[in-house]
Length: 107
Length: 122
Image (cartoon, rainbow over the protein chains, first blue to last red):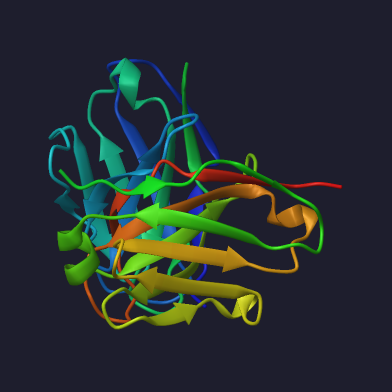
């Protein structure tokens, strides 16, 4: 199966600053990469699919890039509601697999 | 508005079975496949399997082969997930999620249920 590795495990960022989260696939997944945000006690929420397409209702401060094995989620100016755990997921090959998550915390 | 309504929390003993349900709308039931994803306490997300509801054919992660049954009830547009021979490390929140497509392929998940906590403890 495709192993997804996210880095860092935890990132401390101040509100208003930019956050950059990384996701690496163990083999090429083309652009079949999604990003999710999860807050405590809530289900994950789809942010990005196709590596760079924002899902419906997702603010423009969220952007995704990359293809092949290296992907990035950028949050341009962190708002208080953005502090959460972020997961990447590949859907190029069966079975669907997730990264272990990056926790974005307030600095 | 797309809604996936899951059944309530369960407490089960090791070796027993649990069945979790996910009520969908008619449009979702007929036009999308549905996946189950679980999350152990403090851990990440793990895809378990999916079903094309109107066809009824499921696909499971090999990790759960022999223990997992995913089924669909067209009369109630409800998807069921049954996990057997429960162990303590099956304690998790189980989510149903709508796939972004309708075939037996990997997909991203565009809508999620709120999750069902299954606790396995003696």
